[in-house]
Image 1 (cartoon, rainbow, N blue to C red):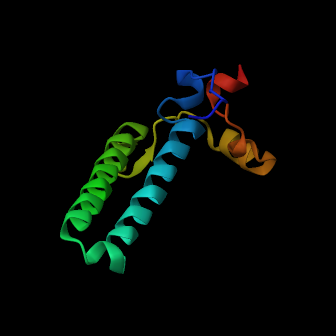
Image 2 (image 1 turned 45 degrees about the vertical axis):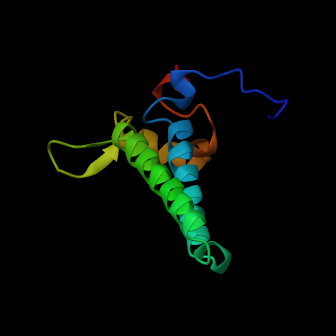
Length: 114
Protein backbone atom coordinates (compact mmCIF):
# COMPACT_ATOMS: atom_id res chain seq x y z
CA UNK A 1 0.00 0.00 0.00
CA UNK A 2 1.19 3.48 -0.76
CA UNK A 3 2.54 5.48 2.14
CA UNK A 4 0.80 8.55 0.75
CA UNK A 5 -2.80 8.39 1.87
CA UNK A 6 -5.33 10.88 0.52
CA UNK A 7 -6.63 12.86 3.50
CA UNK A 8 -8.96 15.25 1.68
CA UNK A 9 -11.65 12.73 0.73
CA UNK A 10 -14.74 14.93 0.65
CA UNK A 11 -17.92 14.94 -1.44
CA UNK A 12 -16.92 18.37 -2.73
CA UNK A 13 -13.73 16.92 -4.17
CA UNK A 14 -14.80 13.40 -5.18
CA UNK A 15 -18.60 13.33 -5.16
CA UNK A 16 -20.81 12.88 -8.25
CA UNK A 17 -20.39 15.66 -10.78
CA UNK A 18 -16.86 16.56 -9.63
CA UNK A 19 -13.59 16.22 -11.46
CA UNK A 20 -12.56 13.59 -8.89
CA UNK A 21 -15.58 11.41 -9.69
CA UNK A 22 -15.01 11.85 -13.41
CA UNK A 23 -11.39 10.82 -12.90
CA UNK A 24 -12.54 7.61 -11.15
CA UNK A 25 -14.89 6.91 -14.06
CA UNK A 26 -12.07 7.46 -16.56
CA UNK A 27 -9.56 5.32 -14.65
CA UNK A 28 -12.11 2.51 -14.36
CA UNK A 29 -12.65 2.66 -18.12
CA UNK A 30 -8.90 2.47 -18.77
CA UNK A 31 -8.42 -0.48 -16.42
CA UNK A 32 -11.46 -2.27 -17.85
CA UNK A 33 -10.09 -2.01 -21.39
CA UNK A 34 -6.65 -3.20 -20.28
CA UNK A 35 -8.12 -6.24 -18.53
CA UNK A 36 -10.29 -7.08 -21.57
CA UNK A 37 -7.11 -6.83 -23.67
CA UNK A 38 -5.31 -9.09 -21.18
CA UNK A 39 -8.10 -11.65 -21.52
CA UNK A 40 -7.21 -11.91 -25.21
CA UNK A 41 -3.48 -12.43 -24.58
CA UNK A 42 -2.13 -15.72 -25.90
CA UNK A 43 -0.84 -16.92 -22.53
CA UNK A 44 -4.23 -16.26 -20.95
CA UNK A 45 -6.16 -17.89 -23.79
CA UNK A 46 -4.11 -21.09 -23.46
CA UNK A 47 -5.42 -21.55 -19.91
CA UNK A 48 -9.21 -21.73 -19.58
CA UNK A 49 -9.14 -20.91 -15.85
CA UNK A 50 -7.09 -17.76 -16.46
CA UNK A 51 -9.36 -16.73 -19.31
CA UNK A 52 -12.44 -17.03 -17.10
CA UNK A 53 -10.77 -15.07 -14.28
CA UNK A 54 -9.62 -12.31 -16.64
CA UNK A 55 -13.07 -12.00 -18.20
CA UNK A 56 -14.72 -11.96 -14.77
CA UNK A 57 -12.35 -9.21 -13.63
CA UNK A 58 -13.08 -7.17 -16.77
CA UNK A 59 -16.83 -7.71 -16.33
CA UNK A 60 -16.58 -6.56 -12.69
CA UNK A 61 -14.77 -3.40 -13.81
CA UNK A 62 -17.51 -2.87 -16.42
CA UNK A 63 -20.14 -3.11 -13.66
CA UNK A 64 -18.16 -0.60 -11.57
CA UNK A 65 -17.90 1.73 -14.59
CA UNK A 66 -21.67 1.56 -15.08
CA UNK A 67 -22.33 2.14 -11.36
CA UNK A 68 -20.06 5.20 -11.20
CA UNK A 69 -21.48 6.55 -14.46
CA UNK A 70 -25.07 6.13 -13.28
CA UNK A 71 -24.38 8.37 -10.28
CA UNK A 72 -21.90 10.77 -11.91
CA UNK A 73 -24.07 11.39 -14.94
CA UNK A 74 -27.79 11.89 -15.17
CA UNK A 75 -30.18 12.29 -18.05
CA UNK A 76 -31.68 15.71 -18.55
CA UNK A 77 -35.49 15.46 -18.51
CA UNK A 78 -35.68 18.34 -20.99
CA UNK A 79 -33.32 16.98 -23.64
CA UNK A 80 -32.97 13.29 -22.82
CA UNK A 81 -29.20 13.79 -23.14
CA UNK A 82 -26.67 12.69 -20.56
CA UNK A 83 -25.09 15.57 -18.71
CA UNK A 84 -22.90 15.99 -15.63
CA UNK A 85 -24.77 16.11 -12.34
CA UNK A 86 -22.99 19.39 -11.58
CA UNK A 87 -24.58 20.94 -14.66
CA UNK A 88 -25.85 23.79 -12.51
CA UNK A 89 -22.95 25.88 -13.82
CA UNK A 90 -23.93 28.60 -16.23
CA UNK A 91 -22.51 28.47 -19.78
CA UNK A 92 -20.36 31.49 -18.90
CA UNK A 93 -18.92 29.68 -15.85
CA UNK A 94 -18.14 26.61 -17.96
CA UNK A 95 -16.50 28.77 -20.62
CA UNK A 96 -14.47 30.70 -18.05
CA UNK A 97 -13.35 27.48 -16.38
CA UNK A 98 -12.35 25.88 -19.69
CA UNK A 99 -10.39 28.96 -20.73
CA UNK A 100 -8.55 29.11 -17.40
CA UNK A 101 -7.87 25.34 -17.25
CA UNK A 102 -9.78 25.12 -13.96
CA UNK A 103 -11.30 21.84 -15.15
CA UNK A 104 -7.88 20.39 -14.42
CA UNK A 105 -8.06 21.43 -10.78
CA UNK A 106 -9.30 18.77 -8.30
CA UNK A 107 -11.65 21.17 -6.54
CA UNK A 108 -13.41 22.55 -9.61
CA UNK A 109 -17.13 23.12 -9.20
CA UNK A 110 -19.62 25.49 -7.62
CA UNK A 111 -18.41 24.61 -4.11
CA UNK A 112 -14.81 25.60 -4.97
CA UNK A 113 -15.96 29.01 -6.17
CA UNK A 114 -17.51 29.95 -2.82
